Image (cartoon, rainbow, N blue to C red; front, side):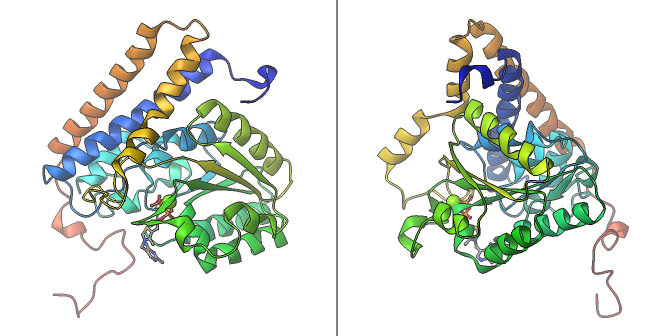
Length: 330
Ligand SMILES: Cc1ncc(C[n+]2csc(CCOP(=O)(O)OP(=O)(O)O)c2C)c(N)n1
Ligand SMILES: [Mg+2]
């Protein structure tokens, strides 16, 4: 926990709680929609990790960029992308962030500085470094945040990205969301040599470790690091420990994890932790409960909007996509 003088105000933490609740409700609704057959493709729920996206993105302006990974809904919401447009995207409907053509792992909204979710581990990070290089060449005051999982720490392109960012002193914050698992494997069981933090330190990139289930700590650490990046301090690295509550995908029952481990991890709930922090500062429990209720209603409206939205016109199948079709297409 940061020193008292550096703590955010209770009102600020109420705003953070609202964002976390929106993400939690979005993921619950996305899981139900998938089970009901409204969503094609995969859904990777961010449930349990909400404090990381929320605490980090709270320091970003719209002109700053975020690059995400396959578990990207929380980053998009925290960066200001409309949950209704995101839900339309999941449902494959017109009005979605990519007019229904991308789905869960391709949610992007450049107007909000959301460069996109990304299904290829860890390609969001290499893109983030490219965007940071562009910002530097254009002498803009903006920063880029690259979110990725602990599993990405065993992929080569990540280390190329670290090298490039350090070599050119680029304005990028790397955020490793360490939930302990890479699909069905414990990441530590498939990691040779030092874990994430030791590897990054070898590049000379400063590392800060934080409890990713405590939004106040994440907010504090991220504010400090983003301030350094913005001031020209070059790449920084935030390692946030957390746990994903559900399976790797919404379909995955997670039988490779001990149920006691899951139950214990869920007790360290970032929403409850924030609520506890607020009640200790004399914030009324009814006000806290009303934030949860308002978020639930907002996401229910997003689902309703997605259900009512039309599917994209067939004539638009080859617009706004890289492959414009051609004679070989039926
Ligand atoms: C290049 C590549 N290899 C393999 C995969 C399959 N895959 C999807 S997610 C993932 C690892 C996920 O672990 P982590 O990075 O820790 O993220 P988490 O799912 O825990 O949030 C893998 C190997 C992929 N998407 N891309
Ligand atoms: Mg992981």
